[in-house]
Length: 297
Image (cartoon, rainbow, N blue to C red):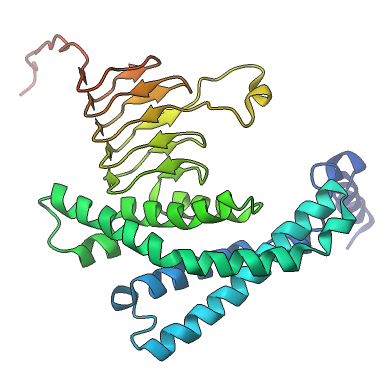
């Protein structure tokens, strides 16, 4: 390597490790949870919950061993997440409790899986009931992006409620990258939830969604953008969608005080920042179409 090349490389490294850059993350990079391991864990959880679809454990003994493996790996990930948080915040004394916290949360996570399974079965059943193209539940579980994103969200939400750093968002962002559906793990979503087609859907952190809600592609349940957005941390910023609501493709509903009443229908491409009463249809006026004959046939 020539002197000029060495100089360029050294300048690059010095710039990357400048003190001002290090302030972005005080934690050592090897303390962070491994994203690939989180993805493998999600795959194994699918195999545990739906073994006959994902062929992970078709006998009770195999499922017990897989559950043990999941628990230990989850515990390590959670411990590394809490260790990262302690180091980043400079709270060294609490770092010793990371493993203890991880043990407790991983145990509780496994105990909650049967309840997640029951809710998820209702999501699948609701999707099957509303889609003539679906031939059976297995097709939905194996191929539908909405089900992939919803299942991942329901797992991530358990950890979010336990205040586990990083991992819940890592989980939902893995699903986001696979499906194009962005569900923040902090959202509250009721049973029999259906995402049809799915691409381009955004569901924000403080969104509340009731039961038997149907959402189509391109829907945004978001927050109104403000200059002092950091002042809204921890506050309700996203809409509330009550039971039995249908939101069609491309609709945008914004704001923490916006409530879509029970049984309402929000039409395609509607933009809403105000509440809608129960059993109301909100539709755009029919646009005027203009047909122009082509000169060259």
